[in-house]
Length: 246
Image 1 (spheres, rainbow, N blue to C red):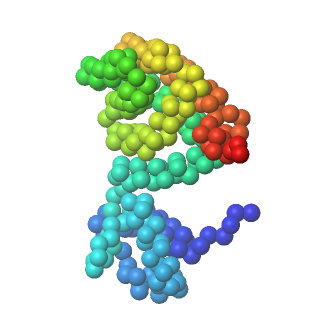
Image 2 (image 1 turned 90 degrees about the vertical axis):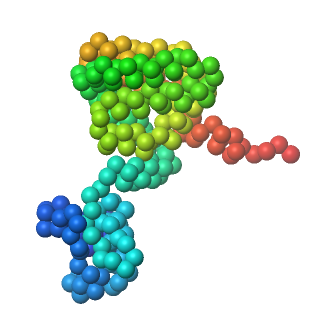
Image 3 (image 1 turned 180 degrees about the horizontal axis):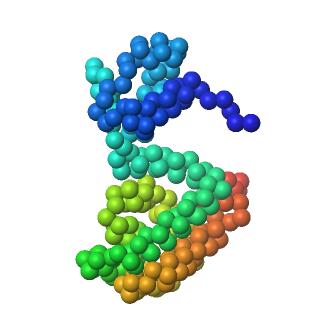
């Protein structure tokens, strides 16, 4: 049985529905704290928790001494919320797998979109990112340019939501690459997979681009799980957990 919702969650949902239904528009003032307390029969702390919840979602803008107003969420809001969610999910093995699966669907879609819609300028930027990745002479630089290659792919959509999603998962993506590299994923293998993705996109072949991206991400995931082991614990975590010799 699902746990009962708290009163502030119910109040937040009521206001959220009013916003999405159009009863409250961007820029509108919401009812005062006192009005909300009287209408819903709740205390001031409940009202403030509900307003804070909506503020975190980017649906309300609050300023000291002024009434809260309805606002429009932006990509930065998405980054903040997803970054926190990703950190929580990474504490659980199933959460890591869920993020890997979500990333696979996300980036396969990016590759397909790029193959169908990339302009000459887009391809030039992606080729520059690929060349920088191939020219990397050490592992830290390779990992940094790896992330840049994938970020450039997200930029080809010219949609700030997609680049925000990539930003939100940046720290996690960096860890995936570091762990997979320690487990045996070589720079040459990963670069060749990046090149296959670029080649398919440049050829305007969305099917091959999808397949190349899926192969690449499956490789990274394979090495990652080799690196963390069946328990899902990171190698450094396992070392810290081992008893020290006396």
